[in-house]
Image (cartoon, rainbow over the protein chains, first blue to last red):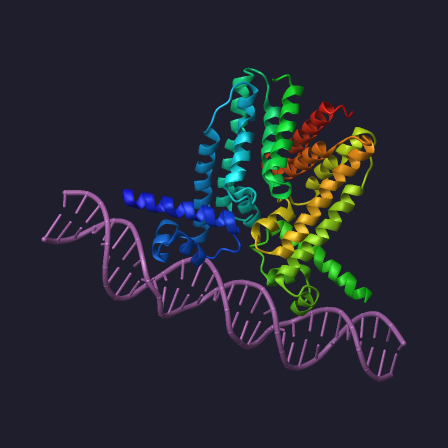
Length: 186
Length: 186
DNA sequence: AGGAAAGTAGAGTGATCGCTCTACTTTCTG
DNA sequence: CAGAAAGTAGAGCGATCACTCTACTTTCCT
């Protein structure tokens, strides 16, 4: 049972990496199988369809990314800005092909299962900014600020592909600081 | 000759709409043919491969979008913010499935031809902000601000899919105004 | 030790894919 | 009006796809 769990998790890791590197469209099941280095039967045992493989990869990235965001720590305003800093580091670590969730949503707009995973992930991500703002400015209405920070997070992911990680990170940080300053959070 | 051009353009319009609505992966050539309401032979005459159809759709959207951005007018700071306003209106007009260019880039990361079209489009879009800033604040170094506005443009497109058009537009406008104010452009 | 569970290798299947081709009709132009 | 150019309809082709199945081996847990 323990072996089963670890095998599934290991396959999910490879699925996530494969999809992140090569996109969803260009990857057939056989290519995914080879990347995960398992038999076709085992692959289908854990992920009974190609769509399940996509969802498995997304769920794995969901865990990976929130774990990553939780790393490190900062105080004061930097506590709010920290997710953007962590995103900047993340973009340096992994192959940057944009947001895996939005890419999946774009490719399979008719899949309710995929849409649900994406919406859930993004909702919790937006909430992350709410929680951090609430800690730094308790009681204050920070909904607009949270929406802005979330938008900067999404924009930074995409802009990094087009203008480079450093440039995008700096732009997002500057905009975030300006938005916080405008609301007297410093 | 005139008929040929208009047929090709009409097909490109339908290709763009199809890809925008259903994504790239779920659309086979036969589905595209049906949408454009032409024979398979004619479709392949104008776009000799599926990749050419994708590129044709992107080029068509490139023209459509820049034409759209050129619409309307504003003065002072609003001249700089205008593309974001126009994007907000655009997102209300078309089916919002994110940025067609970034979606294509995500699905076909190995296609140099697609990557070239995307990079070119985004470079000219980034330049649009530079030009507008140059007009409002002549001589000033506005590279950082342009990068920020471009990032907000990209973020707004994505965030609109997840949090709604109005919310995303307002967040982007607030952030843009704060960034401009921080650089004393008003 | 022994049986269940989980793994491997890889051939096979029907469906679908991108694309070509034949045969014919319509539309524009000199 | 004649010929070229551009269109339609749709069968057919080889390749590839997602997925299944058979036959066998290894690993884990009493």
